[in-house]
Every structure is written in structure tokens, then in C-alpha cells.
Length: 254
Image (cartoon, rainbow, N blue to C red; front, top):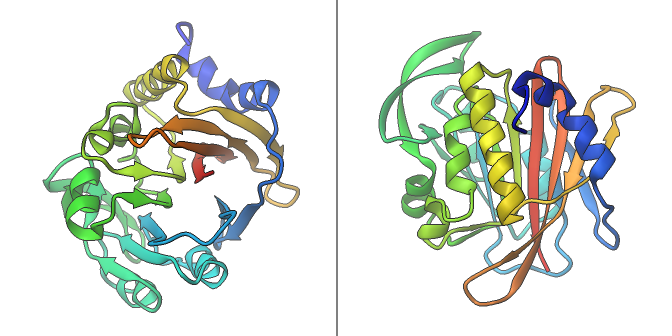
């Protein structure tokens, strides 16, 4: 992690696959979208106030709808800076917010999908504020993030002693797409991994290559102690998709 960050990026899926332990007695649900899979460790028992958040709808809700059919008691919240199509699609099963969610409040030049992907000035809200003011739940069972390169400054929010933890917000599982990075982005990602070596907040578990899409998919597990001295387990899934590295950080409650 202190050497060549470009080399680390290319080898990250291999390292996860090589070093990770395996999970038993837990079912990993696979939920396909049009061009990808999202993953969720299914609960061992019925969860009260189950909450699932999807950031960056991209006019594709197949995975979320499948999750809803499997976990009917869960409440779904979605956000995207493009209202057209996304609002109608997501509102069929959840609550939609027409805004970008990232690391700041105000406006932000974002890469958004309308007819095609293009840059546009959009209303934005930081992740912690979005959850506190709009979702209004302290426990988030699944957070799915595909926000077109705006994910890098969000990493500090999910680190130990980050703003989510400071505000008492517990995120149990995360799917996050990490897009092709700049040098600065790679350093941000590497910093996140370095801190994890110390905090042990996220523990990588296993990996596989999808037989059809040829994505590299990895899962990770974590034990995280909350303020009530109870423990959570978590997992992380990683896939490579063209020039993107897809990481799904998933934490399920024991």
C-alpha cells in the first residue's frame, strides 16, 4: 500500500481473492440489474425497520425491485439528480429524492445520465445529512452507491469515526461502484484501505469470476462493535467491470 498505487489498483481483486477467508451459514443474495449485479446478505431473521438506500438510480431499478420482492418489509429510498424516468420507476416501490448525494451541500458539477451521460450542475447533499434529514433512520441495512466518480470523497463518511458514526448512523451493507480513478482518487482509495488495516472495520472474504459477465466478484466480512456493545458482521464484494473496480461492502447484523 505504500508502493505503486497504480499497481495496487490492478492487483486489488487478486489480493482480496488470495487473502480472504470464507463465509458459512449466510446466504448471499444476487440481484441483477441490466448490466451488473448487486449483492445483499439476507437477514437471518426478520428485521424491524429494514431500510435500503440506492444512490444513483440510472434509470434501472431491476435489482431494487427484486430485493423488494425478497425483503418485502424493507423500506426503499432512492436519490438521483435526474428526475425523468427515475422518479416514476423508483416511486413504484420506494421513496425517490431528486438530488445528488455526495460529500457536500449546495450544487455540484456532476456526470449524470439523461439521454446520454453528460456533465450538469445539480443540487447535492452530503451523505450524512441525506440520511438524517430524508431517510430518518439510524440503521441502514443496505447502501448502494453508483454516483459516477463522486464516490471517492464519500469514503471518509463510512470510515471509523467518520460523520456517519459521529451522528449515530449505522450502515450494515454497502454496494459501491468505484470508477476509473485519477491519481488523487487512487490515493483516496488507498488511504481508506490503509486505515482499515488499523481499524479492521472491513474484512475481505472471498472472490469469484462471474461465468457470463467475467466480472471479478469478491465478498468481505467485518465484525463491528456498536455503541450498545453488540456486534455486527459485514462483507464486501468486489467486481471489475471494464476500467471500473466495483466494490460492494456488505455488513449484516448477527
